[in-house]
Every structure is written in structure tokens, then in C-alpha cells.
Length: 115
Image (cartoon, rainbow, N blue to C red; front, top):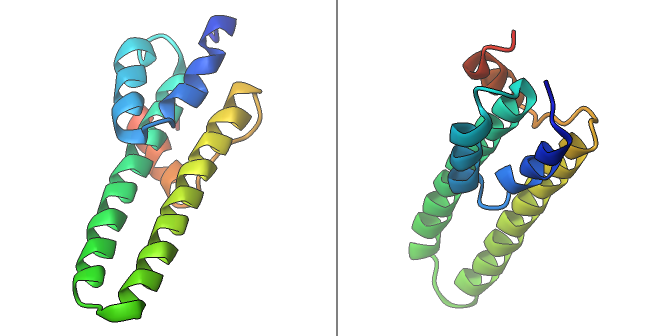
């Protein structure tokens, strides 16, 4: 059963995906199936985000000069776009729309038990 007061929690899940997703999961995971799904999806997005940061940092270690600066800007913009996409997914979910992240939503569905 979805509570209207919980609608903001869909967006909150994606603010700092790993941390806020985990908090929302702990607080609302047992009472709201959609929030449980989106909190798990946010956690998975946060894990992907951290992996991307590590990969980008390793790649950046091996670049020198202007190439390193350009790659750093590209990586930062990419991570910003991924974060904004997560916020957008949370917004869509708060409005009751379909809001799945490709590749992550199937796994989140399995983990949340919503199959």
C-alpha cells in the first residue's frame, strides 16, 4: 500500500544512491513494495557508480598531460549525467510512472521479490 507521504522517498532514494537507497530500504522496505524496489534499484545504481569511479580513477592514472584533463572532464560529466538520470528515475517513480533503469531493474525486481 503506497502512502502519499512516501512519494518524496522515491526521489530521496536516488540522491546519494547507495546510502539513501539503503536508508529508504531499511525504513520503508517492509511496508511499500514500490519503495522497496526503487531503494534496491538505487543501491544497485550506487554500486555501479562506485565501480565507475574506481575504473575512471585507474584509467586516469595512466593518462598524462592534456589527455588526463580531458578524460577527467568527460568522466565527471558522465557521472553527473548518471546521477541526474537517477534523480529523474526517482521523480518518475514519485509520480507513479514506470521508472526502470535498464539492466538494473530486472535484478532489482528479483532482489525485491516483486516477480
